Length: 197
Image (cartoon, rainbow, N blue to C red):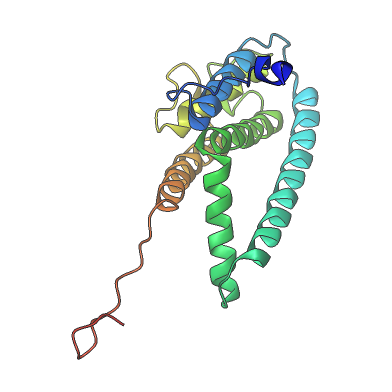
């Protein structure tokens, strides 16, 4: 009996250390680690990285699709589209904005890598002949906040189009994530008796 009383339970984490704060800390750590990567790229290496990134995106999309189907099957809605929509929004909330941002940044990093691999001399200004992966990640993160970096400029039409699309999709992602916390349905009209239907 005394041994049971002597065992101390694990201390709960402090109130200020929320799951969101932990995810944001992990995202910040990942950004720092990527920026510390030193290997230089050639167009051939960039092409292989893009192929690996495309495979990663395919796996991620498949996992998200499977998780959505499993969650939608457990939701109480009769309408299938309502179940799928609610399942997607619940998964977005559970994943959290920092981890969604990380996936978003990496996706666009590989897009910029692919553009540079196709036109290494014309795609971007400010990159050396053998840039680092971190340079493309830096461009991706900066552009996502609608503030493309001043030292690496999109020069070709494809690179400019990609930066504009990234800004639009970043705004859409933040809007979709924020809307997942609110119920935007209009209240039902009151019935003739004065009660809401």
